[in-house]
Image (cartoon, rainbow, N blue to C red; front, top):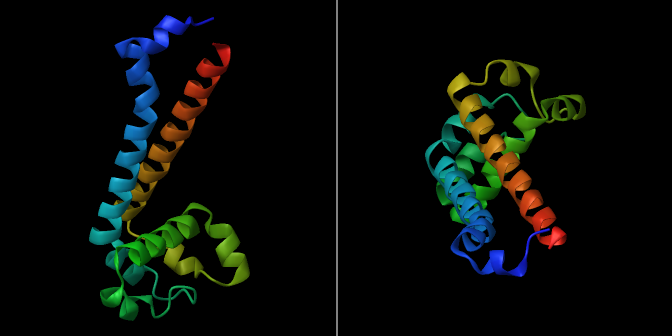
Length: 129
């Protein structure tokens, strides 16, 4: 068991605050990807009916709408089979999606996994208290 005094130490504080910092890094990275690479992602997915016409709307979108658009693209690329079966995605677009953008989306997904695991670790440590 972890005693009460541990959570009042600097290490305990850093351990408890680190999920918030990871969340901030995660959101910042998503914002960067939505501002820098969203147009390239949408151009790469022009054959897909779900994303058809989004490039025309992109210059008029504010930061939150761009963020939501990026997360839609990320979700469709994370589980493309569902989108292909429903007819939202073109199988050609998924096959021809640029590898550079796939790596960035994979990095974002791994950052999510690290954040979730870290929060679970902190939660179990707090429950052991």
